[in-house]
Image 1 (cartoon, rainbow, N blue to C red):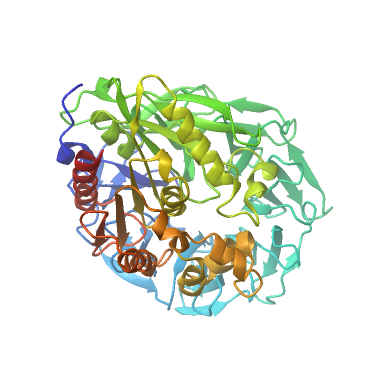
Image 2 (image 1 turned 45 degrees about the horizontal axis):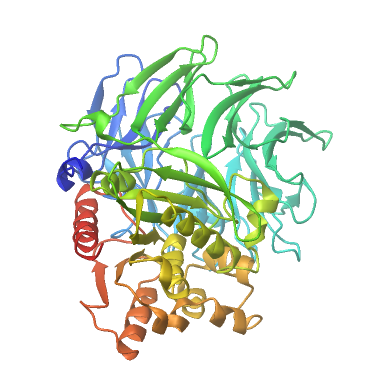
Length: 598
């Protein structure tokens, strides 16, 4: 076994987040933490020179994206309190001056910046449910634009700042999602009726002239890209429907659009010709690519990040005409040899009922090797073939790692995702358990030293696996996880209440038995191996009450803290963090627990 990587060295590797090209492409705004703290930087895409713009004025946790003002003179960012995600919108100018732009109760997110240099489109929960708001920079007034019972999101402005497109659901089918357009003055939403009822459609960007709208829809199982024509009301669809494709935005002239293709836990950037429908895939290594939130640099160049399981993310400028790539931010490795990091193997296996499940496996090289089943959150998400700092931390300590993209995960089409509806805590947990059995059966794995860990919905899964499949695991780690579905419904944010809880489970009044049956706290007496619980006290997605409820239930059942379970509440932290010092703290807790228990 190789010497474990020092925690501080690993957690302190500089990372960049949320790059965004300025309107004229002369600068890239990007969060970067090379100083040891997340700060906003400006990068010159021609010279590669980078300067730090902020000085402790931006969030420590780089969860939320940044956006440029229309004139390119300042950058908007989200500011919360200790990771609680109850954001206000701030701006920082090119000289480093900071001001508060919009302040409202609840969660606030900037969804688009108007080309008229005065209009901001926002999503906010000040009125209860997540709806759209319009802020006028000249008058400093904010108006509510929509008033839906279900969450409205993904808002984009047309070039004239007269209309906004967004997605929500007004049908009786909870699985449905439609694209609406609303006039900013009249405030009367119109359903564009894209796709069938029960499918999910969403907008991406208006065309340069405002007469078209780039949209997606999964009526035919896999998500596809389309261009909606406002004059005819027709949609031109693109792609061959053999993998999920998600639109990103038009090129400057509107003749092409950028998209991301998701296949076998990898993401490839593609560009479509609007007239011919021809698709060109970028020439990049197999892994995960992501376009910047504002990707156009001018001169046919686009901004994107690229990573593989064993290579940290690089920021790239890609030439659409030549296919040439220029690296703007090299992946940082500090004193760590890049060859230390382990590559992954993607494969599929048959679950308990014959369903084909995708998985990603890392072999630490230790013999026999302890194993970690690392479960993703969401649940409408997936694990990718990208660099994961937590995985590499575990691998450096000899643990081999398995990720299971269980039913309900994204990237496998609508039918696969909908298998989890009305079955939260059912078939997907069988998939995870089947993956754990597969890992235990490997002749190079020590079956007596297999643990499960995960965060958010992965934290729920860790709790559930520990009390429903105790024979499979020697230890468990539940991080910001759900334990009591009744309490979760009552105390999460309103758009998580409707778009997560109600969508997958109905309401507690409608399905009281299901809420009780699928709550891990109902089965605490089944715990048979040490459990580590970690939760941020400022978490508004999965409130800290979830961990406290499970801890108290363990105490009531006669379990002993320190012997049977370990409990940590993290101050100044919400639903996870990118902050270096907070990562170090979490790594130290995790390292100590696994070293003693596994």
